Length: 231
Image 1 (cartoon, rainbow, N blue to C red):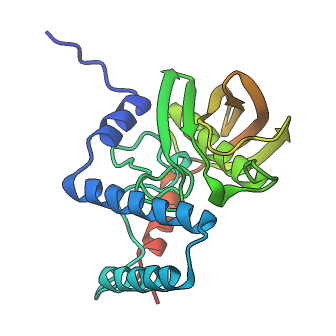
Image 2 (image 1 turned 180 degrees about the vertical axis):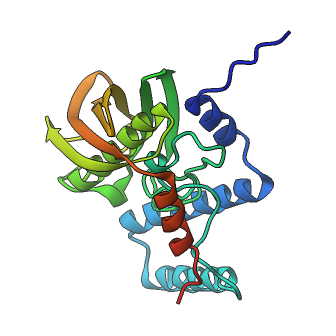
């Protein structure tokens, strides 16, 4: 008989993330193009006529994407903390690591073990705070995302209760950063997590997160409210 062991939440995540549907693959392609626009817009010194033409093309693209029946719904969850290992976990629309969200920087997820997640991110010029460095708010958002993903390894959805960030030194732009999240312990509804941000082997920031498990019915209600037609 074969191995009947049920897959872990992380194993289900990697399977879904690595095998997108044709539509999701095209959404990711579209978002990649959007990232290029955002990055080049942040640093361009193009002349007026080039900016004018680019604006016209983007307005045309926005018009193509506008259509009847448009709603705010999308497949799966945007935030990993709410998924709890769901079979419908996609995170493609996450503003931090979403492959289909053009405001998210390029990202790659790597599981280390049953209690540890690594999120690889590369922030471009559009995310600058101090000169040559990532804005601290984006560093905090990345910690919230990786810690939310980490606490979901327990298999139930949760939400951020407390997030504490300590900035050790400036976090550089244009470098592959490693956000390493650890599931520390679970006490009733409370899930305790920690994380570190590394540039190579250099620690640039660290965080502690307290998450609170929530009834999945509450998440379902929030998704229904999200999916009403946009006005």
